[in-house]
Image 1: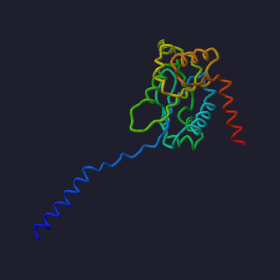
Image 2: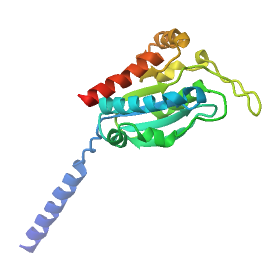
Image 3: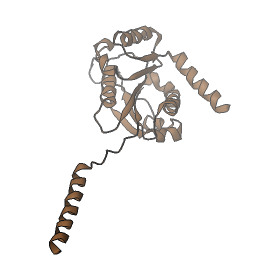
Image 4: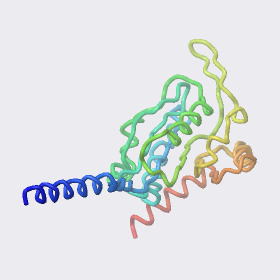
Length: 219
């Protein structure tokens, strides 16, 4: 009788062990969300457009962030592009984009615009390897797209737009705002040549987005 009881216990333990081996906990599904790189010109020539740029960012995040924890990287476009801040989209949703101005309170007093360097940094952030399930990659670039050399303390030239590897943005939706009219066709041509989905807006068209936002808020 005792041997039968022991045998029964052993069988039960074996069944439990086999079940544990066979069972695999399915990985938790990550929420689908967007990764947004916001490149903003910090040179003196763009300073008057900073508030409008922040308003457009706020509107765009509200309309395109797929979840509150979507990622937003704020990148400066000046002589030394760098990541100024990282946000969860919900931070900008709450502030309507005004938090952008907390990081860009004023223009960089030193001259020089490394447009290609800023775009390279944006592409790197858009494609960085994480466990997050990224379903949309979005670039918002606010600049006249003029590449200007630094002259202080010594002259330093920066790469021209055509020297940038535009294919690194091929998987992203690209939006360029406040582009100088003389650079509009250049940027459009580079996007088209590389099969990149995007839009290019002049300063007048960009300010129109802010005016529409104000009307929507009033209504």
